[in-house]
Image 1 (cartoon, rainbow, N blue to C red):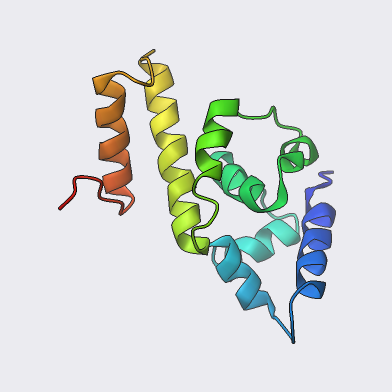
Image 2: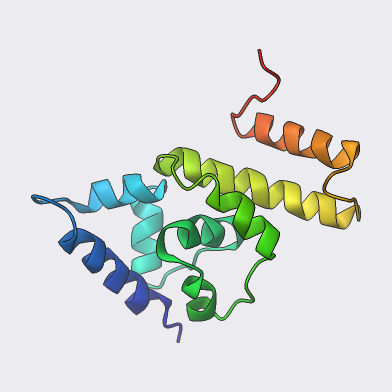
Amino acid sequence: MSKFPDWFKREYRRWSRSQPGEEDFLAFCSLLGYTPETVLSWMHGESTPQNCEVLSLAGLFGIKIYKVLGLPEPDKELLKTFNSFSNLAGELRSKAAHALWEADVEIKQKQLLPESDEAKAILAKVFDKWGFNFSGN
């Protein structure tokens, strides 16, 4: 049995206690950038976060989430890059995690150097797909 649901519930309670007034579950979901259905399925152990979802949650709760889920930590450069998006609001941060994860997978599959023009083109394409436009338009 996964330790994740219990850990995740503790993180929710910790967050809830740290909020002024009475923050609710929907505000927590908004912070995470995921639907209440998804967050509830994680809390109840019906599913666990995967790939980019874990990266997104690590931006809020730290990389301990990888150990709790029994996953290897992601590439340090990927974490470092994602941390630069940590100030984004929930859904935008979630989309940034999805975009970074997708681009990282493709760049590694093609065995490209991250600074190559082809890698930069992949990043631009994937970020555009997720609603981020870096063309300056």
